[in-house]
Length: 309
Image 1 (spheres, rainbow, N blue to C red):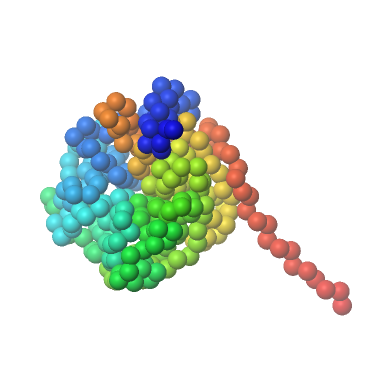
Image 2: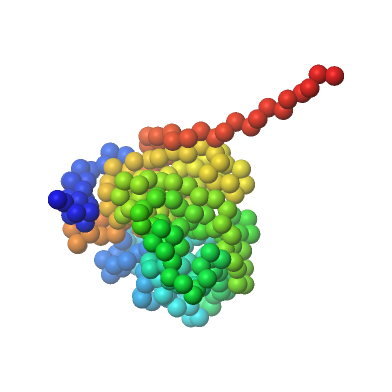
């Protein structure tokens, strides 16, 4: 019998041999960056910003479209325990998520907030520190296998809050990503559970949510997994899952790491290089050119019933 790891390896080889028709390679990730776990674009600067995963340097790295490292920005008061995603708010502040929690045993997690890196003229910077915890974790007892939904690799900024999308590690796997809400300023927060969404249950490694992004006009949310982009439109406020839900099949089964919007119609995502053979690229898709499979339409508001006099 083929186990999950063998099956994933076979799928990777098959998909890598078939160039996806709806993708274009925007650029490559520099070979010296082995674990680029996030991507963000400064709205006024033609470069990609990335960070590396657990145990690497606590810095932002700027890349051009060819993957060449332009420069790096150390965060002097930060520690890279498990950095996973970057997002920015309407004011251009960058948020760096140190909230990877593979074993579901980190009680307190950290988000670093800095000025937009293009506005920082010094060789390094300090960050504002946001701390949060999940009220459902008491920090004393081990999380049960069927409750392991406290890993995190994806978040976005909207208004004065940050919205966190969990990476589900439940056993048995139920495919649900939970959405938590915290403030966007230095403080200690109890993360507030506000919603949830089921992606898929076919195979956990293909269904894990590994990054998130909001369009610049804040009308579209993209969630990334290893095969798809889940696109949410026509939602109200921060009820992201209340609107239209689409799935975009990327036609490429690799370990996806990061997603961002270049503009309101253009999404860029990255994958990790696999065994030095393939991957390690930044890909671009145009929303008006790809097939979006409708999963669910937004519920129509109930009509007000007017009683006769």
